[in-house]
Length: 190
Image (tube, rainbow, N blue to C red; front, side, top):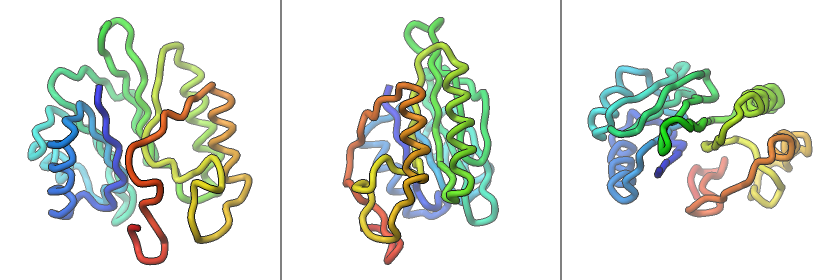
């Protein structure tokens, strides 16, 4: 099952929708997760239709910030079981259908003061599920200082939330495809 997670920084822009259509054409994903959509459900539903996905789940933005969207294709049996401003959690029924797995698509809190509570909630949800699971998205958190380039020095407590989660749940970092650094606070994208 192919899945894409993208912090699109505004799904309402025509250029973003064009880029998303091209990404979908190239990789043919079954599930697409967008974070920082900065729009509300009526527009997400229109995007879902334009992209020819069968269904979607949306967490509305708060003004011009936040917002999550999950799209899935015909043939993907998916049931959203939880959502809030930082995550959507879905049971995915695949082969065999009687062995569902949990998909966590997340946009981690950017405020350091909210990260510990977020990672504890995620850890509790993972620990209460006996089957397989996967977490994808924009964590707004790193495991080690070398995963960040420039800007303020990363506080050790900020790194510990993700490291603790991974250690406590037995998580494995599957890596990613794409550039190592894609964003800078000084001038936008790299």
